[in-house]
Length: 102
Image (tube, rainbow, N blue to C red):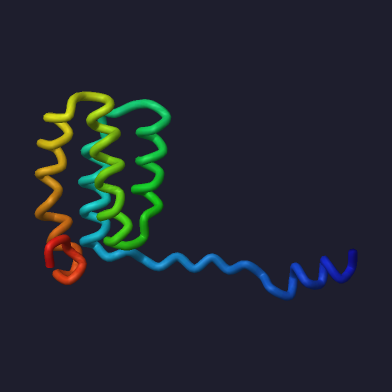
């Protein structure tokens, strides 16, 4: 038991949160606003994933989950309209080489 205690304390876990850029925070707020009137377990799960995303690439990958959550709560046309407003912000956030069709 003493060896386990010693080993646990010899490698302390250090959480290192990197501050996100203002552009990432702006897109995060926009994604959360799209989900604002959506309720339920799946929407809460997607909201949590958006909150915990640290990089622009993670937010880009979450756009489909956000779309699906809105479409399930409202309708597909509403989800398309909401996501269209996000595309310019996501394109400004990601480097050109990471965008589809680049």
